[in-house]
Image (cartoon, rainbow, N blue to C red; front, side, top):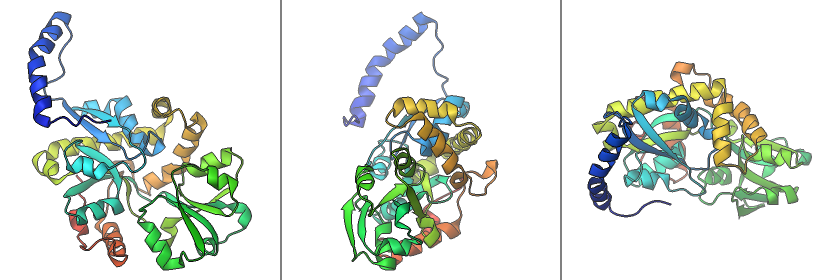
Length: 325
């Protein structure tokens, strides 16, 4: 998917081709890109879906261009190594979650969050409503639980409720096992799997993990500390454009949804529309349009202390993990 040739090699080939490019541009009469236009990339941690709607809206409405940015949005997939890609300089910006970022930082990777797409954690445990469960604790009295391997909150669930009565199996974002097993519970993104399950004839019920106090910022835009220190104006420009994109998407998700659906035809247009409505309050989080994406030290500190108590990180340094440019 990515070119693993050396950075120097790519630069040399580009340099050899530069005179030809300039000559063709002169002959065609087309104006060259503005000299201050910065080309960069934003690496997603999943395929194009409404959770990334604001970034596609920023691209479609010209918000990135208005800030002097030409942003290539790169789709991801299951287990996309976003933190490693950003840390290695393969991409300048990436999308991850706050718990993943703190664990990466604990391993010595100096990455910084600059914008939070979601103010409320959009993940939960999906069960069949026909089971009549009244609380998350009741989920763990028996049955099967499907989770993505390495999911940090699994340790929290084990500590709070115990997994001894559950059969824990890997979850790969396929809802077929859930549809076939009435005693199956699975990790879900509230604006994705439950909608698909409902369209397939199931009766999903979701217990949100934020309701038990696990509420990391999600849809985080991250970059290297080096980028933040050396190019603060670029970081600020990206954040302004992202905020403008999310304003546009929240006001009218249809244009960006059409773009994403063309890139991800496995998700139906109706699902895109439903997901945009469901996720809107999680993105707004009670913030005004001019505050979208902002973060607080209190939230970061709570998460860091939770991860530390679960043995997932050794250092608690939340003030180093984010900025509000």
